[in-house]
Length: 181
Length: 203
Image (cartoon, rainbow over all chains, first blue to last red; front, side, top):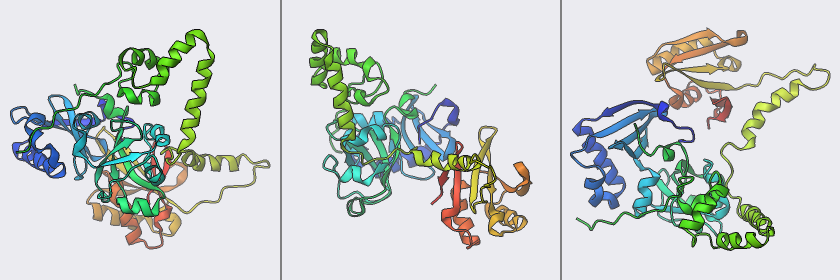
């Protein structure tokens, strides 16, 4: 989604109302309970929260010029990879095999066989339509953030086609955008 | 309140910006190598060895390239999103036209193309082409679309005298369901989006 993403794609940046802020916070905490004790650090109450609206109904949650979360339409908020690297345990993890890494890093969606092969690993609790961290065989850090298209059980049993939609991956447009101007 | 987990510090490569362990998949691994040898030698044990070896023998490089290609083949479970099949579709009709004799004309395929055209940066028009091929009356269709999405919708003469429907606003998200619902003769598999000049199946 962020394969080509530049400042041009941001159509408007707004400081949001406190009521909207509260809603965003609540949504993020609901989605990632592990982040709750950190919320005051991540989204300090004093610092204005900015929501950048971009093309294709994409929203970025920006705090002091650093994009922290993004979401599409009314979908769940997902952390950016830089944030996920700092707090890797907030999301469910799926692991792909080594051969898949280079494809994922060029933006491919995650196909089921890459998750079920010996190098991959699946968290059985993952349901469809949830954000997940994509890890890689033999690597410590996440390489992408995805949105599952099937539940983990389906991925295992069907083992064909797209299992996870890749939303955000290393070295894509959002990754390169460390700070908004 | 639970204890605060400490943020993990990740070593990012100064050259390509990726976490150091992903440098090997980065845009330019060769350029990153000197930095890695200095800063994260334990991540790539082979690299250090290789660097030492290279001074003695350049054959090491060959070895390494062999290693990369074999590991790349190991688990090809994932296909590129922009894999060749997409461009294949686009290039096929051209090939047909170029056939010797030139008399073979491409048959008009029954499909609906949906394209989003952006104007003024944040306003857009959704163009629907090819509904007429399914025997749908375009003027009726535009009225229905306009009513459903509460926007202006008009029948416009497109390029090469084909008629298309322009609908104001970005409705590409909902339009597939609407088309299949309203006109049952249009299968979902015949609806395509055009994104960056590429055809993407809607289903």
